[in-house]
Length: 74
Image (cartoon, rainbow, N blue to C red; front, side, top):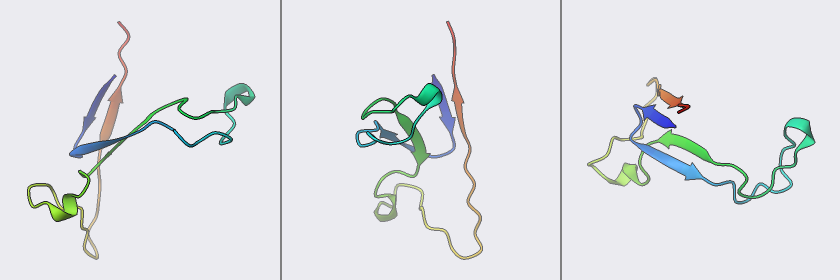
């Protein structure tokens, strides 16, 4: 898998606390750590670091971001 984004950072979530959560395809019950999520975003603590893009939006500002997940079969 390849990930392309105009966001600077990515948050990795391993689903550690989803047991008893949503029922999936064919009534599959998802348990803890049964999947992952990659969420593109600003770097953590970017609000306090002048070397990172600012996550602050002012009234009337528009926020837009693009992320592409590319899956390759070899």
